[in-house]
Image 1 (cartoon, rainbow, N blue to C red):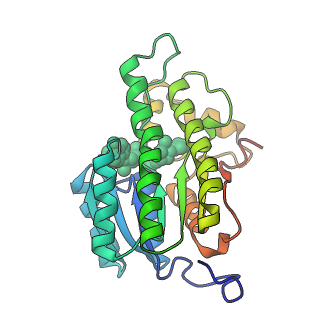
Image 2 (cartoon, rainbow, N blue to C red):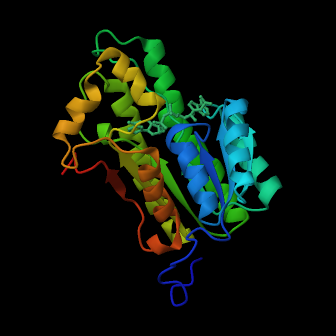
Length: 263
Ligand code: NAP
């Protein structure tokens, strides 16, 4: 539990002493977050499916003096997430913070054209995966650290209708609902649970949509008050702050990190 009188504001390494797991850490927003959390003093467990990419990011962090390890797991299965949480406890002894960021996109298509297989796949990773992750992480936090903080990655696409990305947007709106419900249920136990809703961010994921609509980044940037897409590190910064004790009175929030797109 955060000591409010001593730690109203941390000006140094904002995640100092915390054990954090980051999912989707092999590239994109998750890799940026793993690097940032380690820089900010956390011991970090990186999780995704691709071992070679996880190893590379982990080696970069440890070479730079950070404390990190990785575990390869498929987070759409209960076994995968439970093994990842267990590996974190075995390696670092406890769990204080989790950034549930792994996610997949869908090919842009209208509701009539989307296949049932694609719908099921995106719900399994983006929606059920978050539910499974929180179940395992909250249990582990209560048993080890006694309190904790979780940030789930949603999307600006969750906040209103999203033509061409219906099942993706629905999976992310499900994340918002799970986040707020979990915040209410586990606030009394000292666990804060929030979500971030990124706007367009320059990662591999957005390249899938660029392949269908080459001007998509420019089109969304033109509608964005800051007139550009985000770098992955700008999204990671919001997650780091929400996981830190500097955000000690914030729970149940879906925070847009979108250059003002939803303003
Ligand atoms: P990305 O570069 O494609 O990264 C996705 C990450 O998720 C990878 O590390 C991937 O690793 C992991 N992943 C996917 N399926 C997985 C599974 N079944 N089990 C374990 N790991 C899995 O995309 P990103 O842009 O960084 O996306 C990160 C999050 O931000 C996602 O939730 C996405 O929906 C959200 N988001 C992105 C944008 C954007 O514009 N980029 C905007 C709003 C929200 P492996 O393939 O190695 O498993």
